[in-house]
Length: 79
Image 1: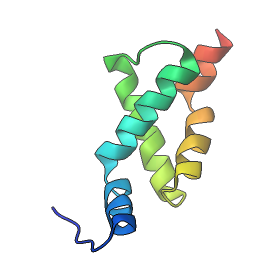
Image 2: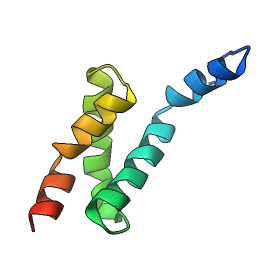
Image 3: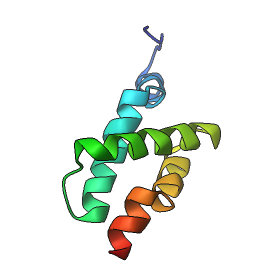
Image 4: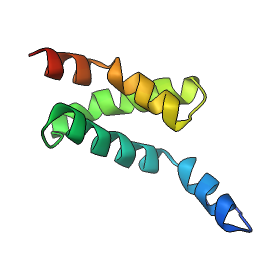
């Protein structure tokens, strides 16, 4: 499962490609954005955000964009 790398920027790219890293970033952003700790029932929407972000290129910008239009963010902020 390893991704080879040679220098620090390569390590950053290798880590950023992993979905568990994206899940951690998304959960952390979600917690700050919605003002609470994410719950187990939020997992499905977090996974959906990651899938949509990967389809949009997988960048941090894509991840944040998909999060702010997600039901988790829109419904929590709207309530």
